[in-house]
Length: 367
Image 1 (cartoon, rainbow, N blue to C red):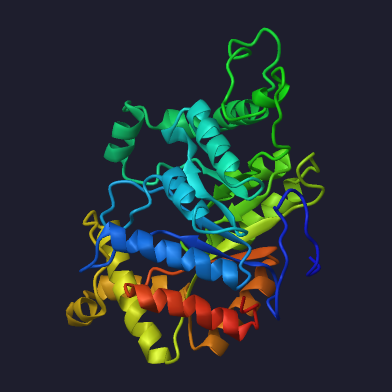
Image 2: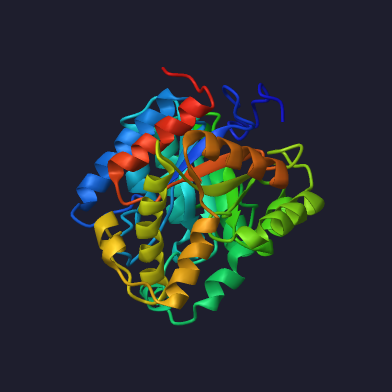
């Protein structure tokens, strides 16, 4: 993609400086030991402002539940707050877990966000629960959890109908309208924005890759926790892509774990804590992201050490030059149209500084 190739209602961005693609941010709003959710959300505001000032294309937050170390259970609420503190950067969900919600509710929430921040809202959708099975059952008020994932294409179609306000005559929802939305523009005296949030499909396997391709939608792949599936999923997306009213050719971004520090040793210290947090999550002991000191004092079992090494091997980390080289190589290997950077280091200042260092390494704008 050329550096000045913009369009598709904000889907395609502009690569600044020497970056190989547009750069974006995925924020999990992580809560570290010794800090509160308020601290984490304030950091998100700081990071969104930094990202906007330095020329990052978009800023997404992801839906998670019942995880003490992740304060992003309500993406729409967080995005409304970030919209009040930014002016240009695109804001979106990476993603909303659609099976947890009624499609009409999501259409209303993101229609409201579009009204708050016209022309800069993305709606990224996933079909996983974003939590464990018991919590998913509580969210969905059912024990039949597979129904949500199995019905995802139908839920998606219904959501898009609500966003476009175009249920056909005779459909039971024909007289139901998502507000704010297009119905306001077709009402007597109504004037409605020409924008509506573009829909993205998110995935960590081939299901959403294929669906996004068939529907001609942009696709976001979770490389940061499913690296071995990245290239096959992107290949599948491109092979199945059909041009649509949204896109005339494929557009795929990948989420990438990153951490840049002035000293490589410090990056490894921070990542050790992030890996310990993931170990606890994967073994049913979710908690706050541990401090670097706690992680250094922790005695990893051999199995845990192997997991930590494997997990951190997929995080592009080190000095700014090392991170830039790693990102450049990853983009060449995957052909990704956009790189969305995420960091789960426990130190909030460390995370903010990491994005600054990466922006400097690529010569991104300073204002």
